[in-house]
Image 1 (cartoon, rainbow, N blue to C red):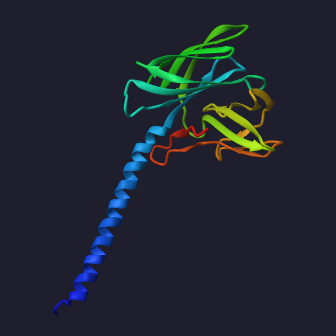
Image 2 (image 1 turned 120 degrees about the vertical axis):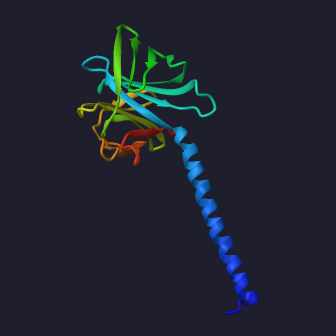
Image 3 (image 1 turned 90 degrees about the vertical axis):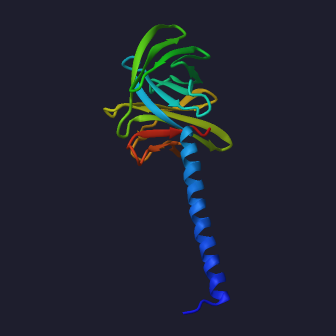
Length: 208
């Protein structure tokens, strides 16, 4: 059957549409792969029987030696301390008011020393988390005030968490690690962590 000029135009239009759709899909996949740099491997462990530590380690695609870090210390009562910085060559020393954490990065664990004002230095080991364990962070605004929630969940299910306002602990709610949410007197806090569908690993995106 002879194809008409209109038929050829329709085929060209369809072909252009299909090629564009495939290219858009490839670009989206590439963007998603690049966005993986925002995801962090999560480690969690104990400093002592009360104080837990959570560590997020990200990759910098432009500098393989640089590893952005987020460290969280929490005792589920009065301590809720966030530290931020970079590891270079696999080690780092992060400081904030009243706390200093030295870390040495490994493939499956992070080890180091925690120093806090008025407390003797203590060593720690935090393991790469599995299942619903991990380090969780949530930021929410209620009545015009910004609250920060943080939780560390170990592989055995034990956790430490706190809600702070201007750096002071105001509540210690329990997190549901399966949903990443915690019900508080203020409202629901939803964390920025979820499970990687490819590996099952708990990964987190730091957004706030």
